[in-house]
Amino acid sequence: MPEPETEYDETLGNKFVFVTGGVMSGLGKGITAASTGRLLSNAGFDVTAVKVDPYLNVDAGTMNPFQHGEVYVLKDGGEVDLDLGNYERFLDIDMTSKHNVTTGKVYQSVIEKERAGDYLGKTVQVIPHVTNDIKRRIREVAEGSDVCIIEVGGTVGDIEGMPYLEALRQFAHEEDEDDILFVHVTLVPYSKNGEQKTKPTQHSVKELRSIGLQPDVLVGRCDDPLEDQTKEKIALFCDVPTDAVFSNPDVPDIYQVPLMVEDEGLDEYVMERLDLADDALPEDERHNEWRELVTQDQTGSVDVALVGKYGLEDAYLSIYESLKHAGLAHNVNVDTEWIHAEELADGHEGELDGMDAVVVPGGFGSRGTEGKMEAIRYAREHGVPYLGLCLGFQLAVVEYARNVLGLEGAHSAELDEETPHPVIDILPEQEGVDDMGGTMRLGAHVTEIEGGTLAEEIYGDDSCTERHRHRYEVNPEYIDDLEAAGLRFSGKSGRRMEILELPDHPYFLGTQFHPEFRSRPGRASPPFVGLLDAALDLQEAGSGDGGAGESARGGDDRDTEEVEV
Image (cartoon, helix red, strand yellow):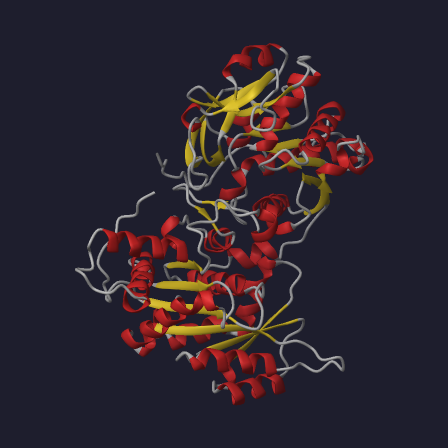
């Protein structure tokens, strides 16, 4: 979608924290940055974030989840890197497509301007045209916030990241010293004799300094906290104060990272360097809900089967996190068991035995769909709480059409063009669409919920606003027959079916939308809370001590998103 643009304005924004990474990718610099932002927010500051992705894709919409992780969907329909999901969850903010800067977006904009003659015949170059466009995008997102945290994807030294690092160098030239901070996250490995090695960090900083950037803060990723002598050696060879070297050791859960970096004093150092310390809330008045939430005692455990075709957590990251959020809402641990859908195609139901709940996520392509439907059938017939998301919703319709309605060969037209019963068919507006990127039904849309239904119970309202990402929908020609056979469509958006449920089942719910994209640690998604509520009720009933306990369903206290058309 076209983005409104302005000329480059050096005055936009307030304080900037740039986070880069070295030695290797996947170190967790995004979680480090998000955690720092969480603590600054706790101190009373308005914090926003930008994720820079140096790949040539315009967005993440066409990327394979197995290679790149899940495609996260924003309220305006932006298909972005999964790190933006972490920023939304940690900062509890709603972001837009502008918060994700990609090389594809930048070069597309520059080339379009060149074709339109906007550069008045000048030779278009990386400097200043590309770097100015990068800086413009960052500054426009930062406008109106106290602090903007910018994570630069990839690793220092990658050729595709060079224009961004040059843009950062220019930022340092344009900004006052106390308005900008460079944080560099590196790996501190162990040698075979158990010594923490600083040489990878030294070389990474050397690479950074060779292009004109001197880090102000160094964060060492290691299995354990950095030893004092390790910090001193890093400080000496990387030319930073010893108190500017911080540890980011492994922790059992990512939501404990803000607590760990707070104990390290990283947030206080950042505020001091940015001349924000005097404006921060006193320590005894800062928001402490995060610490209380993630350190609460757990009173039980729930085993959930996540049935997907990718055996990779990042491919279903938001679902995994949403289950954790629901666990926090119930004070229980959620043990997510990754079940390969292809292994269930031959009826290996034993893998689901003993599971308290089943989740079938979204996805594209036919691989694993038969196994997913076996999981759906198992949950339906055995009374196991079930939650189907997008494709999991559609396959629940297919499974019901086949095994209850008796429509042999029923399927989704997306997966089987020759099916005699296309109970799932393409959206009318998607017919004839050739471009794959950014053309699905995307972003936040309102769903109207029928009264007296499970959907109304868990949302506590007659409507909900959730994010979508799909091209296919329930075929209207089959709706009456499906409902006559017992399937209930309890949520609708115009003529589109959005929520399905089985009234006589402990918990059988499918959503055409993706509720996992709006779940937060302190505001868990209602369908996930309801799933665990039903599982815990069945656990309690099975223990023989009097049946279901107090219900935690109902009530969606999350902020309503503005509907994007």
